[in-house]
Amino acid sequence: MPTLQTIETRPVASGNDEPRLARSEQQLKCRLWSSLVELCELLQIAAHAMPLEPQLFQHLQYRPGQQVCIDGAAFDALYVVNAGFLKTVSVDEWGGEQVLGFPMKGDILGMDGICNRRYASKAVALSCCEVIRVPFKTLTTLMKAHPCFEEAMFEILGQELTRKQSAIGALTCLGAAARVARFLLLLAERFAKIGYSSKRYVLQMTREEIASYLGIKHETVSRAISAFHDVGLITVDRRLVTIHDVDALRMLRRLSPSHKLT
Amino acid sequence: MPTLQTIETRPVASGNDEPRLARSEQQLKCRLWSSLVELCELLQIAAHAMPLEPQLFQHLQYRPGQQVCIDGAAFDALYVVNAGFLKTVSVDEWGGEQVLGFPMKGDILGMDGICNRRYASKAVALSCCEVIRVPFKTLTTLMKAHPCFEEAMFEILGQELTRKQSAIGALTCLGAAARVARFLLLLAERFAKIGYSSKRYVLQMTREEIASYLGIKHETVSRAISAFHDVGLITVDRRLVTIHDVDALRMLRRLSPSHKLT
DNA sequence: CGCGAGATTGACTCGGGTCAATAGTAGTGG
DNA sequence: CCACTACTATTGACCCGAGTCAATCTCGCG
Image 1 (cartoon, each protein chain N blue to C red):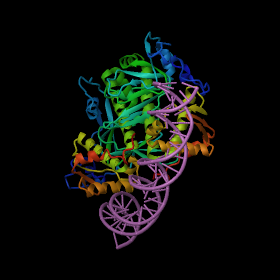
Image 2: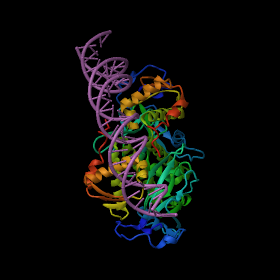
Image 3: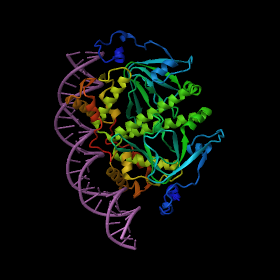
Image 4: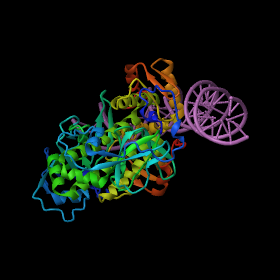
């Protein structure tokens, strides 16, 4: 069963598990449409003086393993994650898969389709999740009508660029352990931003997926995590991570395999 | 004059070098302004039915070593490279430098400033070069006035995203030799696109800079290049590269340190 | 209860980083 | 014009981090 708290697990706390919606095979129907204002606050866009467009946006729900964006499909909309966790994966020409990211609440799916009008990666649900569909046409219309919206879009694309840049920086100059430390800290920050605990959270992905994302092997991820655990920086129980010493992790984060750069 | 051929060197040919402008400390003044239409064709934007804005854009010239964008400075304009070669470099909080790219004719500098209104990297001229300044304010005004322009901007940002994504892919799953092969091929393509030979070109950057860009050490770059040379795929003389077997290089490009991905 | 996916851990190997020596080239100044 | 120096590049010897291969363990599920 899709265990709704796989999605909702706040700090993790509530020990209870997967009860009620076990039976429902199809998507649940909690809320089907969102207004523009709701969308803006999800995206953390200053909706100040946001025009009261009658525009409504459709909600879509998925269960673990289902695909939200399909690699290669025609691009016609962006999707904003409203709840749940996903991974985005690119499939190269020889079938190799590479995890690109782990979108969660407030993140946007499908931006890589903007340039060729075709999605360049697929998004797969890791837990039950819900996304809001934003047709690209609607988006451009809104941007023309409301300058503040256009600005926000540039802001978002710019952020994405910056984020990828920093990922490149990490890949080029950090060793395996440092990458894992960085990953754990970044996850913590993102959880905090959407109201979860930043000290204690559940990894929604396998070690294998983390490894692919970080450009290392899953055994190496395991070893790094175990090492952090052994020296008391964190506690790990299966997928549950508890961070004890944020500062020490931050130090570790800058460790390279003996400082590569100049 | 800044040796126009340092800029114009077609296949490389003209062996002559750094003579005459040694004295002129300040920039030359060959052409100071470009029209919107000229800018569009430089960017390869379909300027079809492009409105005849009276708008003119300032040209700026730099000599090797000079900075075009300054890391941390307030963002107020993008710069389009009109001639010459540069490198973009990010400086992390501990002083380490990382080469992010090697912009050339038609490329855009400064996009990483969009999100925080502050440049996140610096651009340094590798040869004499000339860029066209496009104030961001002007850009947004133009976009509002002409939808096709807005579309073009999204196209450009999207492309940049895709490019960075592919760079990440390379970093995570290619070995050192494959990265170098990929680099040489990508350079060849880019040279071809701006009218140079794709078979024979001059590397405008040091091995060290290539290494930083690829996330490996300069000795490794040297070894990879020597290896390609030794088996006859390419010929290398100092900075001059001649590619003999594009297809073989393309094969090499997919070599990982024993296929990492799943 | 057995099965298979995920995770952990150990032993071995190797790609690429480190250190060091050599050399070609360019710029400087006498 | 030629030494002198600094920078860039190449090459070799050595070593370590992380990949590879494999065994074991746990958990969840049929």
